[in-house]
Length: 385
Image (cartoon, rainbow, N blue to C red; front, side, top):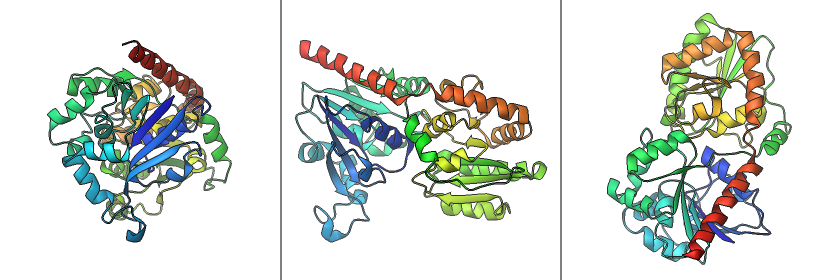
């Protein structure tokens, strides 16, 4: 079966990590896979399986001019043209092929592109990874709401990564969606924890960690503010933030303003964050919005207790705070959760055991089987028409 995946880029986001775990575990004796990138950029480009055929539209802005496909072929300019003028032109010239299945694995440009396919025989899927009401970032990718709704209407199925994401999508667009949960390669995660030792710590110190892009939607400024209050009563804690992004300078200023620079460490982006996660006591998700959090799933797999704000997908991951502590989506909620978890060793130990138990539910092999079965079912339906 000839399968196309279209992504915006292959940077360090959670959805991109899920994508890599899927394509890395496909059965290439049965499938031919092409990955088309809007922006030829990201840490995962070099990690694509050797069997994957690669296509791309734009060189990244960091690519030297003399190495670009054509002058000015950079994502900053090109993506604007793609969004506002003619996604059909770019699909026809850079992506089109004889595919059985065409999958837009990310919202935005990727979804707009696959919708341009005129192949009547291919089955088309659009993946949605976020609550599109609370985090309507794709608005900028279309001329108006009607255009975005029309794009989604061209798909055979819209796949939502959680029930909350499904409900938000259906409410916003009045179109149906189906839930297929994310899964991660748990064996690979465990293997990577052993590649080096995360920063050693004293037994007297409770280490908190949060991992993600340093962007507004992740709420790291609220986490720093909550942490600054926490250490007034619980001084034997430290906080690691792993990731990079446009909010970094603002977070550095906030850390200085709150005088917590000796306890809050901005570690930057890490291609392998798992040893740092494994060596921590509590994982904290401070996001304003999520879809089905990749890093919370990783924390569960490694048996790390979680404190998270209430947002899409968390109750499906953690139950009613059965496998991790879900708190009000606010600075106060984050602080209350951290005070409970750091102040109660019995609770902390109980969540360690429950996290590991829950982590077993997200096996990548099972999810690949589910995706392949769905594809085969839909292809068979299309052949019978």
